[in-house]
Length: 184
Image (cartoon, rainbow, N blue to C red):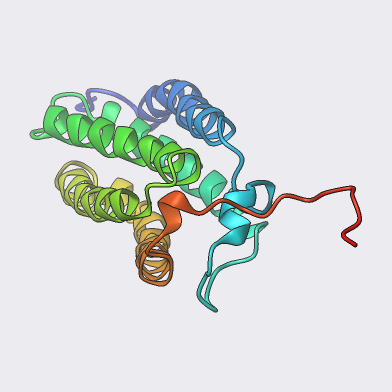
């Protein structure tokens, strides 16, 4: 027998990591996302002038759930690649892009900082591209799992750009409040 570990042992190692990383990344994303109302639950966002290509509200949680699941799986693949050259740098890049990702939602929806959110999404996009490249050097399949994330970030960047362009006063925008009183 000239194998160090059988395929079953290798698969079990990956599954042990995935059992931790997938729920961790998914629950972290859900937790941070639930801190601030978003979409039609956020009166400020509803009041913004948005472009025609703004996805419907239901698309955001669906897309982010898929993205966080895939990120968790990709991270498990990298963590399982013990001894691989570049593994530590890839993990560090992953953590940096994850923090940037988690900061965007409160910055945009709670802080109403559209221009800052645009800068952040551009930095996040660069960090995700770097992470994808580093993951590809360790495990090419892990990098492929970032494709939907990159596609969604392209949309998010275009959307944030257009919202910033259309709403130069977004920071000071006060949404209309509903009133039970009748105007005479």
